[in-house]
Length: 170
Image (cartoon, rainbow, N blue to C red; front, side, top):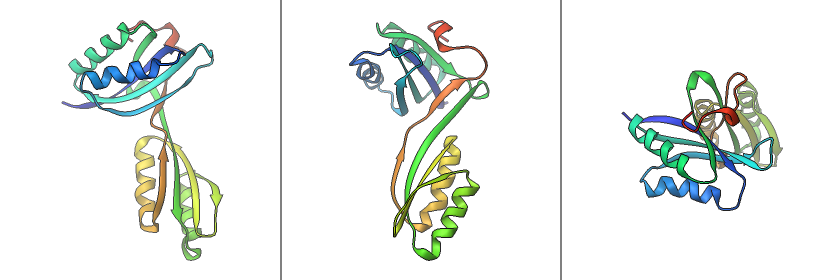
């Protein structure tokens, strides 16, 4: 069975690390559904959040291969009920004057923020779970989507645990 898995990879913040991590997936024939990366509270380290599909055996193989990379310090698989996962969406929608208030009202219902308003378009910012993002995109389709930018998933484990004090196999 092909399930989606969220991995958090704690790495040394050096040039080329992201390339080595993502290259491992392509060499093994795994598709990355989503990838986001950024510095942690300590600028010497970065966190890479990767969403990948596969069975448990494939996930175990990927985790072991990641752990072998020199710059990888920790790998954690996030459990859905023990983590907070969010994605950011910027969406530019056509906004004819007769539809503008409907678009803004829909954005408000989704707790989105209007970040740019042009003569014939509107840019909306929305954060949330991927299903919420997908639902909002579907709602905006009839108005005419001009552009979409999505960050990919980012996540943190609930509670006081930190990726810095996990073992390499999570």
